[in-house]
Length: 434
Image (cartoon, rainbow, N blue to C red; front, side, top):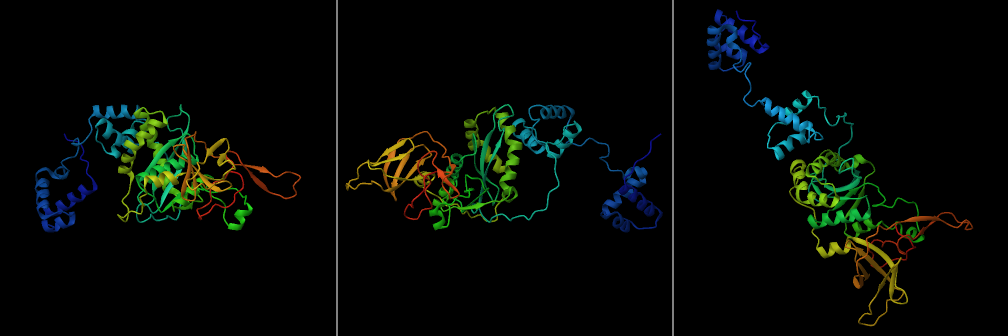
């Protein structure tokens, strides 16, 4: 004796219509309209109902194993991989790793169901999104680039933390350049800018937070700064001015959300992939980023920009080498030497015999550590590479006997300050670095 027949609501409706057809209450044409099938399909349903009754209207795949269903051995393999070396991957990342590294092609939804049934929870909770006014993307690449740094335990909790610097194009969220450095410094951003300019070119604008690396955050204004109406820039700020790159400040993390969300994705995926590759040092990680990871990341997450045009401006290697550097104002001594802290640079005698004594010059330290001295646009001296030191700044209160209030700059690294924006001459500067 057969058991009960379980029908869906759709199948129950078809049974009722076929009963009316068999009783002659409705025609087969009307029945096809009622149940939403063609006339030929209605004839087939009538034949199956006549021979097998309501059971004939049950879908033929009911109770069958799907042709694309995973067998138990493959499910066991995926569960072992999920709880093993890929345990730190989220669902989407695990799906991609299975395809790329294990040769297993499976949908993300199947992975999600397998993991939840196995008791493995989602890696991150999805919080409800707060309402914010979304800024539309720029039209084409190179109009706006966002850059920032993210200190984190990138090589695992057992390794010391370091900082990942990255730059992302606002138009398509493409990861343009990235590099690991020990900590967030001016040198690190200059090296990241060097990579960006060399590979892609100069963007129209750079979007960043109000870190003191980019903008002056102190309230000290010298007499010269008050007269000219602006503070001398930081070293990175001066480089952007020389390259004619607009520096845009963000006043909240949400304002530069593309690069912030990018770091969320990188912290979710990059840590796992570095561990899978067995990379535990910054030098190897930086090589792997340039040769492997950036291309795969952009293939997965980069969007299509509204316009195919590009606003990146190509620069020569010599111009990039010259301008992406630290620059200081200094005064040539009576012995035709420039002294910067403990460094002494001799200026050779020029062909015309003219002396540079007491002249304001521009001294640059390039990213390879070498030094050059410039009189306007003419190089007048050079010096071998020295260890690259991060310029520091400090403040010292005026003497208590001085009735005037305020602070004055105290030189820390070299007895000079960064050059101001290019105006064809070098204004007098107080001692100190900014």
